[in-house]
Image (cartoon, rainbow, N blue to C red; front, side):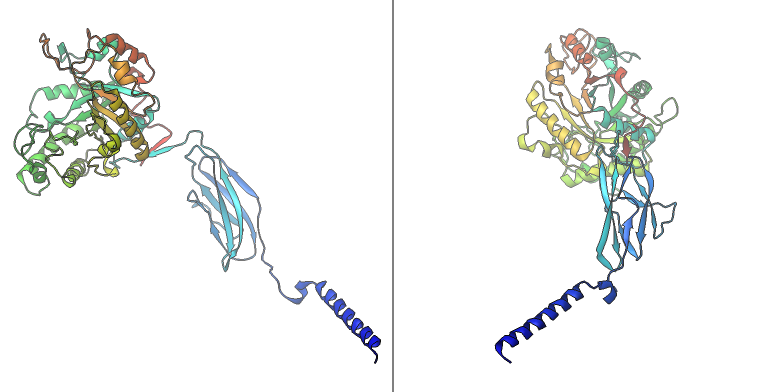
Length: 488
C-alpha cells in the first residue's frame, strides 16, 4: 500500500473514533448509573417574624434523613407540637433588642454534611426592647426588683436629688413631721430619703430616736420616694465607734466561727433583720431599702476600712453579711450598694479605686461612691465619667451616695458644683449629707445642703426647675416594674 492510501485509511479510522466519542457524550448519564437522586427544598424561600414570641413552621420537601441546625439560641422546637419529616414546628423567642436579627436554619444530609440547604429567618425590631439586670437576691420581693429596674431606667431622664436625714431634722428644727429643709426652699421633698441603720443594730438599739427613723421611712415610702441607708456601726470588738481603727483584728474576729465578736456582730444583723422584716407600707408589703454596709472602705478611718482589713477579709465580710441577711434571716427587701470614697482626682487609677476590694458582680446591686470633692468640679466630673462607664459595663445602676461641701456659702453651688458636672452622666441619684440641727448655735457650721436663709437658695431653685433634677413630685412609680426591663 502506497503512502497516499495509508494516509486515507488513517483518516477514516480517526473520523470513526471521533464519531464514537461524540455519540457517547450525548448519552444520558442516568441510563448508565444511579446518579444523585436526593431532593431537598423549602416550601418558603424566607420567613419574616414579628418581634414577639412566635410559633411558626417550616415546610420541607426531602427524601432522606436530615439534621437541623438553627444557627442561634433564640429558635427552638415548639414543645406543644410534634415536628415531622415534612414540617418543623418551631418557636422564636421575643426579640429583646432594638435591632433586627436573623439566622439561617440549615438542613443537611445526616450521612453527608456537605449536602446542605439553608432557609433565612428574620425577626423584626422590638419597639420597646427589654433590658436584663441581675440582682443579688433572686428571691427579692417584686417591689424590690422593681426598684432596681427603676434605678436603672430613671438615669436616662436625670438624677434623683437626696438629702440625709432631711425628714428628721433641719438646721433650725427637729422631729417635726412633714418638715424638710429641702421642701422649705423649693416646695418639694427630696426624691431620696437617706438614713443610718447603725443605731438600730448595735448597742444603741434601745434609743428612742430609732422610732423616728422608722417614721420617716414610712413617710417617704408613702410618697413613693426611695430609701437608702448607710451603717456607721460601732466597733464590735473594742466597743468604740465607727472611727475606732485601733485593732486590726476586728473583721478577722467576725469571720472566726464561735468567736465572741462574731456572736456580737450576728446579733446586730438579727436586729436589722427584725427591723427590715417589720418595715411595711400601708398595704403590708415590706419596704425596699438600698443598704450600703461598710461604706467608704477605701479610707482608713473605719474598723472595716483599708488599714484594718485585708482585701480577702473585706470581701468575705461583705459576702457573709449579705448571705446571713438574705439566706439565714430571709430579708428580701434589700438592694446592696457598695460606695468607696472618691474625693479626689485619681487619674488612670479612678476605675481601680471604684472597684477597690470589689466583692464580685453577683454581690453588688448598685455601684455608688461618696464624693466630698468640695469645689473641685474637675475631680467630681472625672469620677462621674468613670462611674457612668463602669455602670454601663456591669449593667448596674450607679449613685453618688454621699456628697456635699461642709459650711459652703457659694451662691452658685448647685448649678456649678452639682448640675454642671452631672451634665450627660447616667447616674441615678445624688445624695447630700446632712444639715445638723443646731438650734440657735450659729457657730456650728455642720451643714451640706440648702436651708431657708442660705445664700444658695435661689440657685437651688434654679436646679430644682431643671428637668434633669428629679424630686419627690417628679418620681415615676418606682415600685412597679417597667415593661422593658427584666430582673434575673
